[in-house]
Amino acid sequence: MANQTEQFIQSYDQISTANETTSASMQNVSASTEEQLASMEEILSSTTNLAELADELEDMIAKFEWND
Image (cartoon, rainbow, N blue to C red):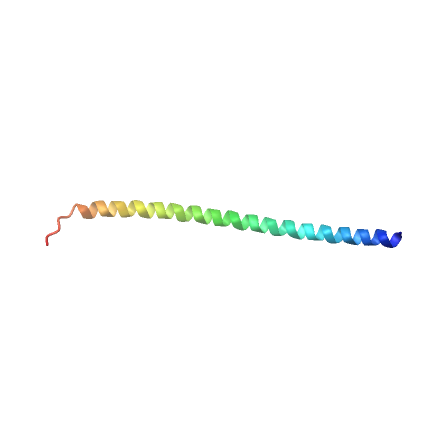
């Protein structure tokens, strides 16, 4: 009976360790996902600004008269 109790405790400890490892991994994945989202938001903002600048440049260029 004592041997079975020890085996149970060892199994429980292994499961507990596996759960802690999984939890830590999930936290890392979550942090990475948040970083990627922040990067994507920065890229979107930069792309929007670049599109606005391109529109402004196009308007400025349109003011010039081109002679062929």
